[in-house]
Length: 530
Image (cartoon, rainbow, N blue to C red; front, top):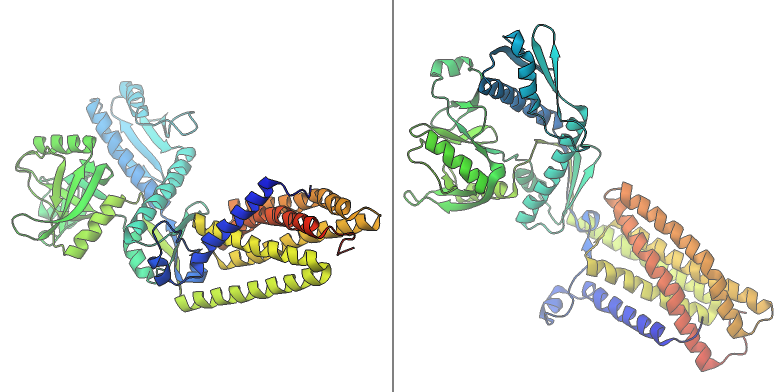
């Protein structure tokens, strides 16, 4: 086992070179790195929020508002379906999550229920649909969303929100934000290096839900003032030209079908505008709607507020257009960014925010470096005093271990947090523990009368089982923490997991090569630790 195999020597040499090459950028000033050739690795450790400073935000996805919106849409779908089928009805309303409607003709109740069942979509489980339709007494039909559908919608909304938030933050140029789900409906955002949480909130918190809806020209100003709206029409806050608009509830097309949005300038007035472009289905819907409604107005609605309501003068068939309003270049750029990144499926409510200053982060880095240096020095002293020359070999392996961990984390751009530094220190302790097991086993074998080479070889072989057992246990613990933890816990688990593999490599392979080299050169008659 102590043979100086060529593959072991090559592996140790390459691993040490790797560790030095990818650790070195963390020790060099930025000017020196910039002056190096392009092929030289320049990745530095990606410091977490607690080490670099930055912003922490905790949002809650308003799943109740999402459910209400789905119910409102289902009410309109029921109305349109029954009208299309020529079935008269009354009393269509929604209360406590249940949509009820009464069919005028008793002979058409079953036909109406059959038509309404078509509104359902298959559940993720593949069994049943998301809309439950049941007939009641007095010719009534009730519709509800199944509990499984509600849970699936909430989970999907959180997932979509995370992706939308990630695209928005990436567009700001914030490096490596950490965006994770917390519980069923909360999202944690950690943006290291971003010291202004208000800037993040301004972009993240806007729903940016864009719809194009037809203006209901039949509603008078008096009706709008009194709030009396006909079925299928809703009152929406307006712009500077008109305080309120009566709009058809059902959108002609929504922002989900946008493929691009850019800040531009109007060709005639030169004022900032937002140009947009739909995908194929959106262009088709938009073209059909504008062709059918020539001379009528349609409203461009953003987050339940009308931006503008132009009159359709010609069919818009190209699938592109402009959003005009009282934009500045900055506000038009921000709106185009939000539209490109997609609308949030539901409103986000801020639950907690805090800022970690750069000075506090620098103090944490300094404290971590000091604790690492003290811990490493204490281990070096112990292992050298206890095992002499073999202790020196173990200390060299520990240095290689640190180089490998820092090099791997720099190469993979894994985030190092303050608990991650604790994981690094714990890793060194585990690595020393492996060497202690090996050396003590060597002592036992030497005391039993075996030759130095045989004692060393047997020591490695017999200690390997205990070392693997201890490290596999640590790896399982790290896996559990990484799977179920968040933020600092994950940082600790990730560093610990990397350290388990590097500790096994350095404590077993590197010390084997060093001790094997010593046996070849010194040809000892006795182990120095016997």
